[in-house]
Image 1: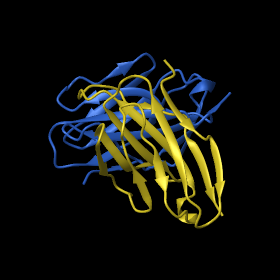
Image 2: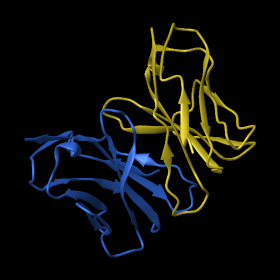
Image 3: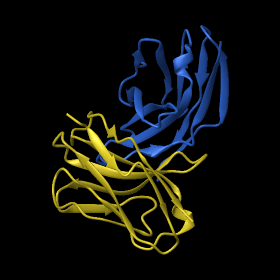
Length: 115
Length: 113
């Protein structure tokens, strides 16, 4: 079974600064997907970014980018130019290539943004 | 499209009571699933379905039943509620393609006293 670990329960960043959230995972599979989800106080789960394991290029979505290190099984999220609206819980998630659409989540990192 | 809807938003039960959490989607998604979210543990998969009439267990299925008689609906039944089932429950759905995004409902906060 796959496991996903987020070692930082809480992080804080100054507005306009850059912050990196860490995620490691354990799997014996070679093909899979990795995701970062944002959960604001409204509880809604919002997809931030997705990475396919077979792609060497790191995914980027506006101010959000990942550092995907397949050999190290590491998948960190970098948020540039942090904004107050970025304050939320962030979850890293793993999906097997052939396991339907079921996700395995990490425990989450609470990000606080200081004005 | 309403997307993924869940009812109720909040519920309080007494130990031993039964209830059904409703989930519906209007996007004609084949895949649907239920997760529970507990503090510090992220979301964990309870049950999932890859199509009408087909369901299977996830990581934490004990104490829950599901059925999928239509593509649109995927209710989660608690047979005899226990305090350990106090949690936030999310329903999610997606198309069956490998690259398809999973859409989450707004969640149901359940408290079992």
